[in-house]
Amino acid sequence: MDAALSVRRLTVGPAAENCYIAWREGASSALVIDPGDEGKRIRALLDSLSLSPGAVLLTHGHFDHTGGLDAFLDTPRYLHEEDLPMLNDSRLNASFLAGDERPRPEDALPVREGDTLYLCGLNVSVLHTPGHTRGSVCYSVEDQALFTGDTLFRGSWGRTDLYGGDSTQMAQSLRRLLTFSRDLPVYPGHGPKTTLFSERGLLWNF
Image 1 (cartoon, one colour):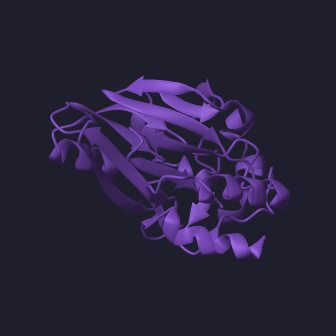
Image 2 (image 1 turned 135 degrees about the vertical axis):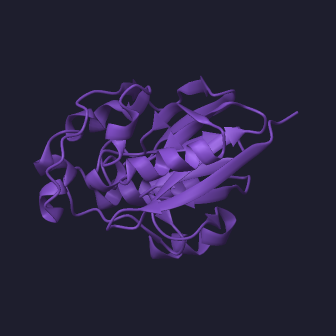
């Protein structure tokens, strides 16, 4: 029987980035997905839910998805190996564009395509979806929710003109997601929630 999955969204920072808290009902720890800013506010939400941070999942290395990491220095964090160099390099993570010079941690546990992680009582599958960055990933949690970072939004997709971006790879990644045989709720890095089947019309753009 599938675990009952709960998800809360907190929109943080000047870029209105979506940080998510995901947990199995009855658990004492949770996944923190893309703590982009306002780390203390994210911690306060966890406290209000009587949850501790068990793992941080980063969908990619851009500054607006990593700015709250200082509140989770003792929590294991996961990032695709190709985006590891971006973490604390303002030229690569685009923080110089926003004048955000706050240091980020310089390391994370690397993930790769096809990895399955068991974290906080939840099964997490890693899908490598390059295009926005070289190491952009989506995380499928318990095959009940897909956290897409800046790969797929409602009605759109992430930009490809920054370091590591590639429009051809983005098209391939979107085709991969949008031709899944099973519909899943999509929790994007910016903007409102959607579903995979609702976004299939985007395929006409490629």
